[in-house]
Length: 243
Image (cartoon, rainbow, N blue to C red; front, side, top):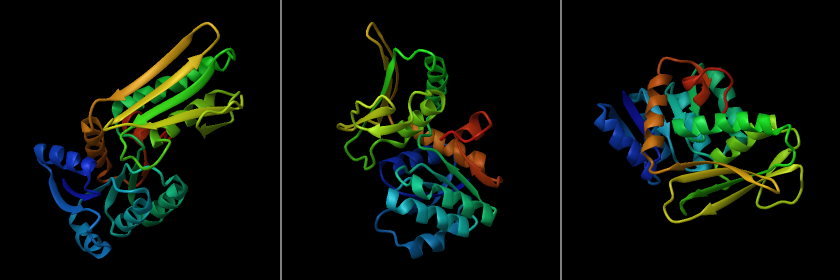
């Protein structure tokens, strides 16, 4: 598999290392110094592009890939307002676009478990739910895309909550997300249900970027030869896109 890396920071280098170990070829490494003209010139060499850059660049990168008929896997978060346009362009171009806020299989399971627990908690209003996420100090967006995905899964099942908010909020209709940035933490997400008498806590903690890189490579291999917009549920279990 010939891969274009759009974003060559810590995540891009982790993907490169794993890709080379497993026999794939990197045909483009685009960092902050790479011009858009250089990207456009080299993209056609790739079977698939893996995009982990910055929120302000993600949509443009996805657009360039689709216009070059190159399948694209994107893990950059913080640009959700342009996601619908990206999917529209993908369908127009009969291309292939895979987006996930988190490529960890463990996070996929964690989100599914939280959805099931929220369904049960819908009949137990004595429990108040909150989310906390912790990431490294270099992460630009807050809350994380993963925290938003978890919150949206909970909101679909928990009728007493209408929307999520960043920070502590006393409104009973909102789901509070606390975002913290500490050191080099790869990612930690915790969902807490608290009553006057006890607490139920679900937690996922990533130990390194390896799990995210492996998931992105798996998505890239899975995407080749397909058409449409996809997410983790399509690859791992079928059905409606969850991430």
